[in-house]
View 1 (cartoon, rainbow over the protein chains, first blue to last red):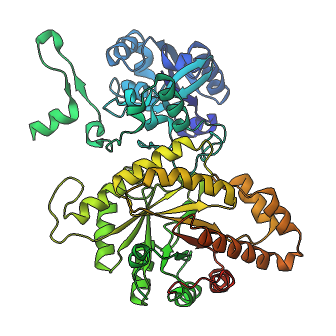
View 2 (tube, chains in turn green, blue):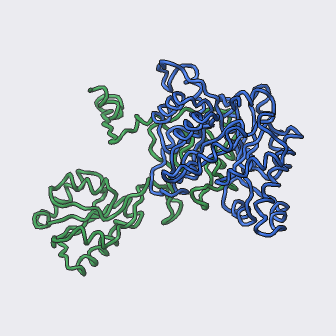
View 3 (cartoon, rainbow over the protein chains, first blue to last red):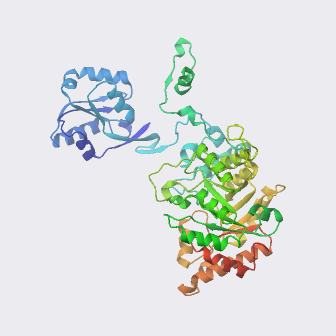
Length: 232
Length: 301
């Protein structure tokens, strides 16, 4: 789940300076779960913007805000409002905002600050456990990811900043390396504890990531970064 | 004066000091400390943006120590440079006549004075150690041949008071395996704990010739000691030392801290618990010669 927070409303109103007619779009997936861009938040944003003198000409919650075809279909349903609108406030992660970007040439602005790919530990309690590093190595670490859960992403053991099982970066945060050793001990996998791991190959996840999968056509799965390299 | 490497290989008790480059261009105090210590210690660490606080660079200051006839221990962390930057700096270090490199992870930017900056950590300390080894063999990290190899004496750190200790010992073993020549420990104050740590460490380094120097940070006040206990990961000042520091008036606290450091040096040397000490006086380097005198240690003895 992509976890986001609400942008300060003053920031949004400032960005809308000189514009009156606004469409507010939310996302039915992640932004709904993190309570930043669901039905409630869209309604809340409508009230706040109207209070600030804006005219909200349409609101909607796209089922999947980052599905560009979904977004286009929703905008077609609001054809008149879209023509009339001067700006789109998008309550979702940056992917959702840019899905709207791809559907209109008008002013599109984010209403949320995207944070991380989060596990939902319980309602409104999110923790990042995967950093999308391109080559999953967590079997070597008792399936506790040091790339993500260690703020330094250390691959070969704790730094000197570990203290009573906690991290120097945040005293509330467990030291990932203490958790990893405990887990590997439980599993009895001494070989994993004594191995030196190579540094990550960051070229695999060079931005922008891109993947075109056409399994039905018999093509092999290709990572965009590699594909682009081959093309050059 | 011989080199730090020669001192380590000689089998005698090794002493190193530490220089923290200034925050600014005023190098007067730093140069005074360098000149004061160069012939009193076997090697002089130069810290690399210590505690993630931006300062003058360790590379250039290490080069200056060479120029002034000393032997620097060039600290380099993985926090501020990626693998290109680290290797480039290592070649630059070789050019400046620097041979001792201390490979560190580096404190996270959020504990320093540029909290908004992005920590790099492209390599970890193990990779940096391996990289020094490769460069010594005449290759860069990816295996390209170097036109002229390096000749680094490769150091690393370990935290004897790390809690829990086990993950730290595993990392220590990986550092030994990666090709570390010498270790300097995080500051230690509890000699019994340190002795127990050294027993475990010696088991790991058996048959390798790896040298281990105990890190000593000179206590300057009881407040500073309590602060370290509370806020510095991996440091433990036992109650007995806190009481000892508190037993003297404020103005004598520094002298008491020096006495304690000297006592620990004597103790470690007499019992051969480790191969030397690394003394960190944190901005008060002028007290180091007196501590060595109190401990009856001369670097060239």
